[in-house]
Length: 387
Image 1 (cartoon, helix red, strand yellow):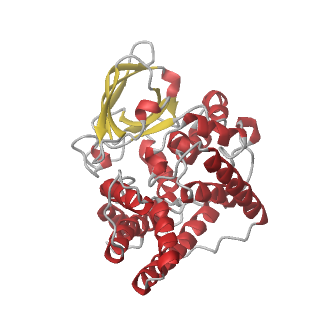
Image 2 (cartoon, one colour; image 1 turned 180 degrees about the vertical axis):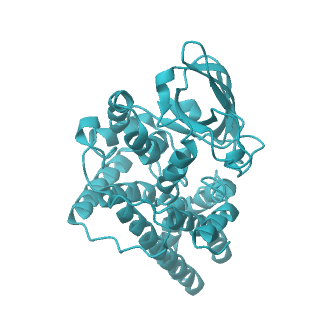
């Protein structure tokens, strides 16, 4: 059920969520003490650690809201929110499973066949199966409806795929991609018609994954090229021609989570520790402003999680959270730079200098991934009848 209103009911208090939050904090403190990971900025895209993901699966912290018959745990969205929030705040290496747990699994639950669900969902919940998003394409920019990747049926009833996808985070570590393809010619009267989603095994012949490195030399973005890739006919996800509806439904999960404003939280936390040491009035004021914005964004995001729990699909509020949240992530860097005398460097012995450098080098992606802010504002305006 779609929800175009920006007014959502407050998230209910959840004792179970606070209990699992305490459990996650205890787990993370033990892992940090054992040296199993180090805190970094933006780790939901750059922090790939399959062993860490498997530990989360073993504790029941993946696939939390899914039915038990598919490896899930039938817990609430509020409980899941508490887990993801704590992992992000700690800068834990969650990128391996993030896309699969956040949106690919729910997409399979909504549109997958029983065979697809039984074979894949338990592996995601166990932290053993990872997914990539196959939406954006070279030369298409934010115009998703203009995609050129095509899939045609062969004589055996299988799909033959040709084209390319870009900004496919961690495709080189993933097992599957849910790929938006054109399965029938475009219609000038309805550009969204003729699109479908395929569930593609990334180990199939004909798939090439080319790295796209970011400013610090890191590699999580990719270009994925499909050259006469034969995808079994039963790997269509949902209905043929229904791809646009399925993609837009999926984006509510992608855009509304705490990762859209907590990518730079490890920098804020390090800054908070420095402020506690120095007591500098300008820094204290900056920390207060940032904290107030985080709290407001958190309430917005929590309300969307509660709406998803109720079976609603709050596309417009999710677009707004993503816009405002990722703008905040960039503002964090500028606000902190103004009030600290620290040289940003990945090699700095100062943890604040390292966190600031990481945040700066990852910053170009904050307002691009998941839809540019300009496109998101257009979505919100259209949803509210303003254009």
